[in-house]
Amino acid sequence: MIRKILIANRGEIAVRVIRTCREMGIESTAVFSEADRTALHVQFADEAFCIGDAPSSDSYLRVDRIIETAKKAGADAVHPGYGFLSENGEFADRCAEAGITFIGPSGEAMRTMGSKTAARKTMREAGVPVVPGTEEGIDSDEEALGAAESIGYPVLVKAAMGGGGKGMRVVESQDDLAGALRTARSEAQSAFGDATVYLEKYLVEPRHVEFQVLADQHGHAVHLGERECSIQRRHQKLIEESPSCILDDALRNAMGEAAVRAAEAVRYTNAGTVEFIVDQDRQFYFLEMNTRLQVEHPVTELRTGQDLVRRQIEIAAGMPLPFRQEDVRLLGAALECRISAEDPNAQFMPSVGVVTRLSEPGGPGVRLDSGFCAGYEVPIYYDPMIAKLIVWAEKREEAIARMKRALGEYDIGGIKTTIPFHLRALSDPRFISGDYSTAFVETMGPDEDAGADERHIAAAFAAIMKHREARRAMPAGVGGDGSDGPPGSGESPWKLTGRREAMRRGR
Image 1 (cartoon, rainbow, N blue to C red):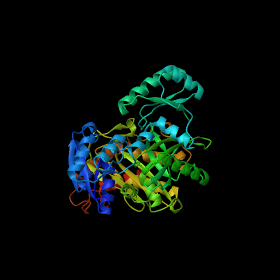
Image 2: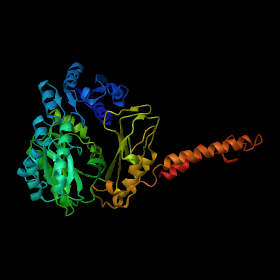
Image 3: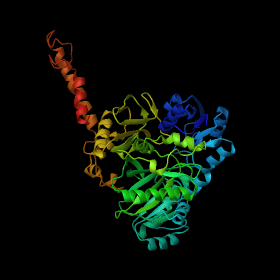
Image 4: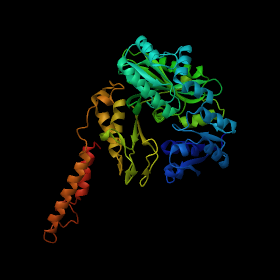
């Protein structure tokens, strides 16, 4: 069994992996940049090493420094988390060359599924449906025009490598194609070091549904059900839920079997996610495979009772999966909201600064995966996601109510967060009914209550000041109850204001 794991990541996912290590009796080694010297994952780990300056290119993306640190610490395995080097085939290869177990798939599997054109070809051969599009990368504008005409507009220009919506453009007509190609190529080169792009049919207002798979080193693969990820902005997921409202048992079984075939086609091992697009006719198509643990993995954990990080570690250590497909039970409903340091009322601009206060939610069925604490300074160098709030309940409507309650309890001061956005989204009739698509966010419209919190606080402060001025004019002893509230009330106006605010936010 693995004895010590270096976590080549930061934030909430590093904390998440450390927790499972502790339960399994495995020592944990954290790495950190200068910007993360006081971060929560540094405090949680058994030991921690600085690997460079704040920019990720000088720290969390430095393969040489991470492997050198793993050797120095005596770690016999590396967990990459997600993002950074988690889908870097070279990193997996270098770990193997150094005699360090990489907790993830092989470099070969990553390279096959990391190239969307190669993955599409492999999926076709495995009998997994793919969105109509080009077989290879597009070399010229003339080739693109011919391909787009054959596919039919609208088309999607997509980077062959990477993900997260980078190097991706929707093209409605041939007049826009050349410009979209230039922009997508430039963005892909900058983000992934590869300017290759291809074309595929753009499906209007589809659903984005993914399946969690696990595959061991003994030829055994299973899926753990689906996660609906259609609530997204610029192809970045914001809310995930399971089960998906669009799937019935027949479609769920067909997609799950396709996900397992996809993993088996590349001899995949460890945890991975096969992502599908479902069109308005409920036809599904392979989108891509994420060869790592997903941000939204807790949704699956709450529905199945499985610790996916534990399973990752066991698989990497050569242990067989302890269950079969028929043993998987999917219970209740789960929701995840990604909490990011962004201002949803200012085009989701990043919000950096010091967290001045923090009150976290709890109660039945509530899980919080967080990577920060009060006093933490949110840096500008990394992804703005700072936590994930996940809930479980027996029924979907109960899960929605529980999430809204938990969001109402979550108070983060000093920075802007996406909590107000999530409260709006969960109250939207389209979400409540389950009748939504990937166009949900862009069709939400403006927030009519934007700025209400600031106005409420300012009004409350003014009322308190006015009340205190009035008390100073009262004869001594009036009120007589030691409070700052109305005479005889025994209530502080701060407390009354807090109650009104809690009621307004739906607590």
